[in-house]
Structure formats: structure tokens, C-alpha cells
Image 1: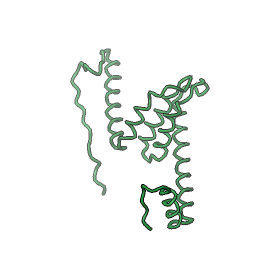
Image 2: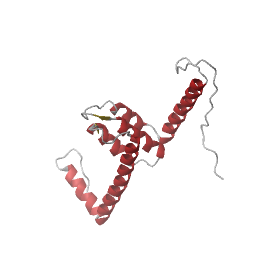
Image 3: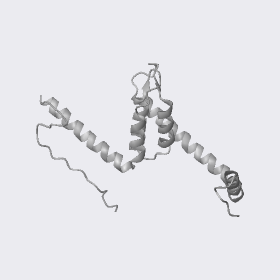
Image 4: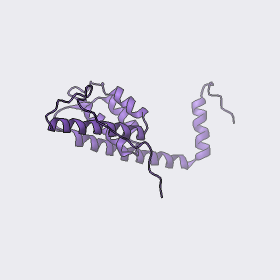
Amino acid sequence: MVIDPLTTGAVESIARVVEKVLGPTLDTIGQDFQKLYAYGRDKLINRAAEKVADLDDGKRANLRVARDILWNGAFSESEVCVEYYAGLLAASRSTDGLDDEAALFVDTVKSLASRQLKLHYEIYRSLERIMVEARANGEKFNVYDIQRSVDVFFVTHEPAQI
């Protein structure tokens, strides 16, 4: 049976073919995805809650931002991805829940591979350490005008497995 996607009822026809081919397996796959989603969703929400100073502050996440974070982040296997999504969810909270400014950052995070996010995190943490050290030494720190020379090296490949 060949299905023309431009014909009326194409979606229903595709659904019938999928059901005929997969049978009860389709239900099992759906249940497995639901379990994976629920596990990832709960993990994200719990991580976000850990990042909020006062959960009873009356603030709530923007629905659009929360939807994108949960949909994309719930299936993240990388801990760095989970941390970024959870941070965005926590940061997107506002009194009226209408602040959707985090949407751009959600799009950026979901467009990056977990290794790219990890590199971003390492660069950010390195700059933070430099800033903390500069402040401890009484130096003025401005990320755009670093007052001292600093060499930063990053390993760009993973070590070979033995």
C-alpha cells in the first residue's frame, strides 16, 4: 500500500499502517517513552527546585518556556544538559509567569550537543575562577578587559579508552 501524503486522510492511513505493522508493540513503545519522559521530567523539576531559593515565593515558570524545557530536556541523558535545562527552568520563574525571555536560551541549549554545552560550562567556570581569584587579590575584574595575562588550555578530545 503506497500512501500519498498530499491526499485527504493521509495521516489516518499512516496511523492504520503503523498500527497494522507494529500491533501491540506500538502500545509498548508508547508506554516506554512515557516512562522515560516522566523520569526525565521529574529529574528536571527536582533539579530546578534545588536551584530556587524559596519555592513558596509565589513565582511560576512561563508555560511556553517550561513546555520547551520539559519536552527537550526530559530526554537528555547528559548531566550537563539536565543542569542547563534545570537552571533555565528555575530562572524563568516570575510573579505573573508571563516572562518568556528564557525562550531564546532554551533554543540555544537545545541546539547544542552535550559536548558543546560541557565546553561552554568549562569556559564559564574557568572565567569564574579567574574572577574569584582576582577579587581575592584585590584586583578589579572585568571580563572584557582582563588586567593580567592568563593562559587557559582545554582538552578538545577524550582520552583513548584502554
